[in-house]
Image: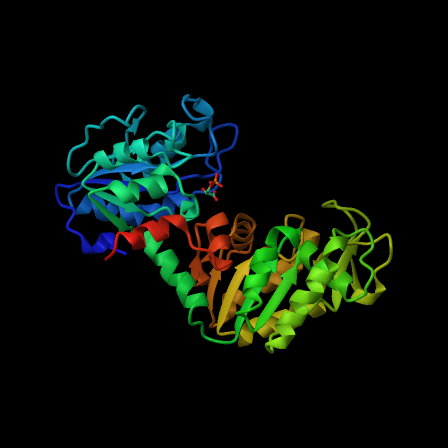
Length: 390
Ligand code: 3PG
């Protein structure tokens, strides 16, 4: 992959694809700026190099061919201006040409409003390519989508390069998975085995320990023959859980299951929390977190790990009474010397809540893209950059 940092951008028109798909509440307030902040070094580099910078991104999933205020990048343009300290005008109609001088930056309105973006339309990709001398793919969070602004344009741009953020993400993920410092420990939690089946199956062939949490753990607990009461569980996947566990054991890896859990009679912030041994869970119990003994045991494994990959909180950490397990693991990651990488929306919310952002070695901007990479899939945007050569 050609790296943006190896190119002379002076006086060039540089079209940079970022993933500025940030959560925005009803009042128009951006509720997490992580993706905007992560894009700043790339934008500053291009500006300092004297490029005319055109930034493109999607926001949400609007209908193509119509402009809608709800999906406008206007709040993002405003925030980018504030953070960069320069004017960042939002250009509404841009597909057929944009005026921008070297040293200036513009944000192009939501590319998913363009007809043909979603289906990677060739004519649209060529129009994007015609806007620039150099196209920079920096949107790791959208690298798993084969769309005109993430994939098609790479085929037709005069020069196509990987941006610093994209390359940093790929480098960090490679470090964690391709040749990891061992033991390699992964934490995969979430409500369902079914939505993370490919992830679990892929990781189990690489890791030394796989810690499961949430509804996923409940399914593994049930597969071992324990009752899980009213907990979220997928009874049709008990054999699948057993198979994953057997695959782990066959290569000397382990999936340590909770020995104690925090249960409640209902899913609510004020529900009374009780710690129970895993074999003492009754029909009326709902498992909402791992217990303190389990948390201590997992923390010990994390302390010994060479690499930690974290996707998913192990309990209902939004409710303080059921957040202690996730907090204990977050603190263990923060104080470990392991190379650690965290990704996914809920995981980042937990990282923020427990204040460990600075102690995690790498925090991914990807949700779906992070998962697909961990699943061992080729990301179409990365494949397209590779096809353009070095
Ligand atoms: C994300 O938020 O995961 C990316 O921005 C991709 O968004 P999408 O799932 O709508 O393609």
